[in-house]
Length: 241
Image 1 (spheres, rainbow, N blue to C red):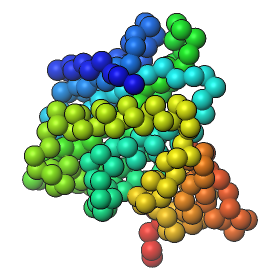
Image 2: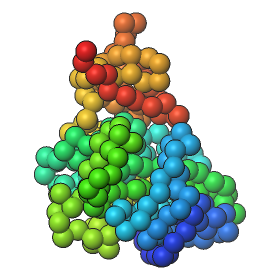
Image 3: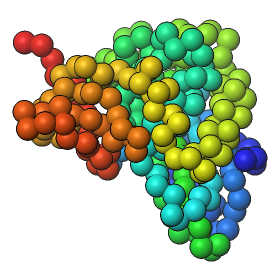
Image 4: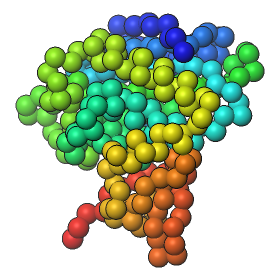
């Protein structure tokens, strides 16, 4: 899969631009922005960005029959493997967050749209912190902490990160289109932030026991093992009293 690469100095949301691109019949696109003023995260959260972060969206067409469950996990695995091939520092938090050294590094937002070709348009939005927070910033707004790629590799610029991620994500999407999430299950388990830990998925407490072949979280509850579908559910680590 080959992406056209396009960069905007500023836009409201790379996901919105990419969705419009697909609605108009455009092909595979990797769209990045230097500044994003109306970015979106899951559950209606905002994601603003500037030169201290990297924001980009992938726009692709995929078969309507393809099960997209687990796609955000496969995307996370591809990103983590490209940036941290030793799997020692970047972890993944189901269903869409990347963590570096225990603090949040970035997130993934997947949206779908109908296209003129009759296939399903899929946009994968990614936001990654490039630089640490400035001194004096109120860190209370960052409930999961704040990590930046500069601590992993100080030479990483937005362009270098995209150069590394583009081929990794293209290869992942080609595999996902033919095989779904199953081949990525082991890769996710190597980086699973919550495996074996007490968590709460929405209102439901339990112990995280990895994911199944569809990328559903396996939550051990008092009633037994309960697969959890991502959707709009959020996962929180339970704190020890």
